[in-house]
Length: 117
Image 1: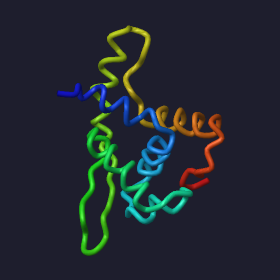
Image 2: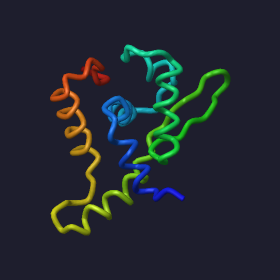
Image 3: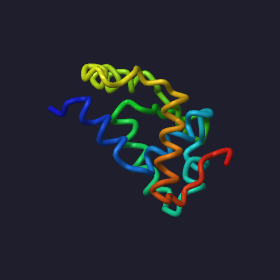
Image 4: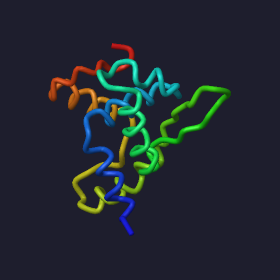
C-alpha cells in the first residue's frame, strides 16, 4: 500500500501538475479549459488530472456533458504537517504556495502560462 504522503509529493513533482494546481487556485475549471494552455493532448492532460485526483489534490465531477476539476487544498495539510515536523517550515499558506508555484514555473521556463497572466 502506498503512503498517501508519497502520492501527494509524487503528484507535486511534475511542473505540469503544479501549473494545473495554480490554475485551479482561481476557480473550478472544465477539463478542456485546463488543457487549453498546454501543448499536449486532452488524453495527456487527463492523465495528469487522474494523478492529481488520485493524490486527493483535486476532485472531478461531471456537470451535464462537461467534466469539471476542483482544487482540494486540504489535501496539502498532511504534507504541511509532515514538513512542520522538521521545525523549519510554516503551515502551507495557499497564497504563498501559489507564488512559489509561479516562481518555479517561470524558473523552469515552462511554456504553460498561468491563468490571468
